[in-house]
Amino acid sequence: MHSGETRNQVARRLQLSPKLLERWRGEWRARGEAAFPGQGHRQEGSLASDEARIGELERKIGQLTVENDFLKKALAHFREHHRPAVVSGGAACTDKSKPPRKPEGK
Image 1: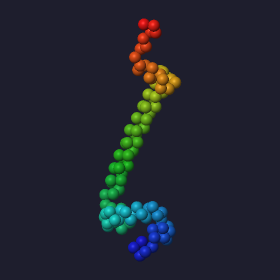
Image 2: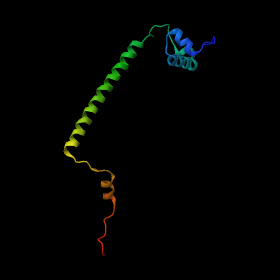
Image 3: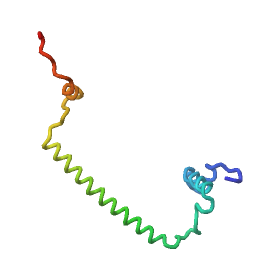
Image 4: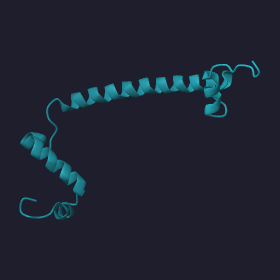
């Protein structure tokens, strides 16, 4: 792109998405050579950190699955055993919050 080609021309020539090319360009501008370390090979220790991250994400998925199951059961329980507080809209709630009416004629 420094030679005058547009982003779309370069993306077409390299068979890349223009958005991906722009993202890479932004990373290069922000971090320079540090944005793309290595020569197409994994860095040392990268495999171990990837496996640790995968383990962490798998634990998180398990935790979220347990939470979702709990919430589904709780929702089913409340649907079966508790009537909704509001049946027909806002009037049911607002009527409860108004002060009691005085009988007419007094």
